[in-house]
Image (cartoon, rainbow, N blue to C red; front, side, top):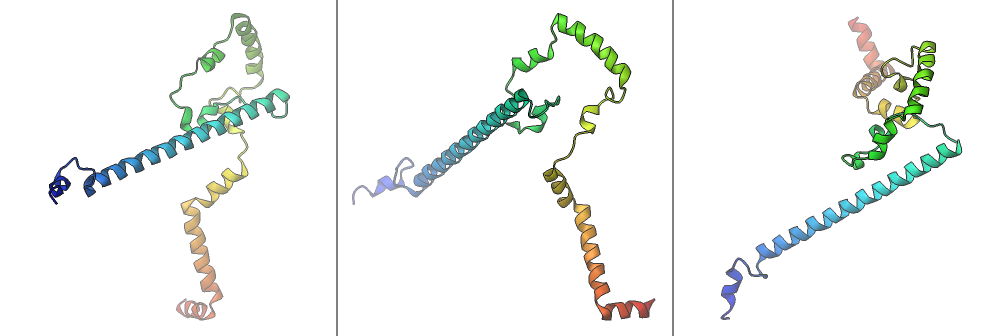
Length: 167
């Protein structure tokens, strides 16, 4: 009985306030660990996809697409500098001369490909992307509701009779 005053101390481990603080801190830690695991899993999946895509391109099964892949991927690797990408953009001296002569011939043949954004115009849309755009369009949903309401009125003979009387 002489130790009850300890529960009133701010540092006591048995006080409900301190137990709650510990529990909240543990929950935050668990949530952070779960997020870290999820990010690691996503990074591993992205690496596997990139490796698989590279294998397909090397084998010739899938044509190599000249586009900015980092725009299409998730933002997990954002902020990680890559000297590999920078070096790939810098042409070597003999390759630059050959590329200049071939690009002069190619530009004379096709002016459409030289237009800004021309690489992105002819890209076919995937079925999933088209479905998502179609089914998440709010204007389409409004028009579908309007058409459903009109169809219900047309199928209701009493409403149609009222409309004919008013007109």
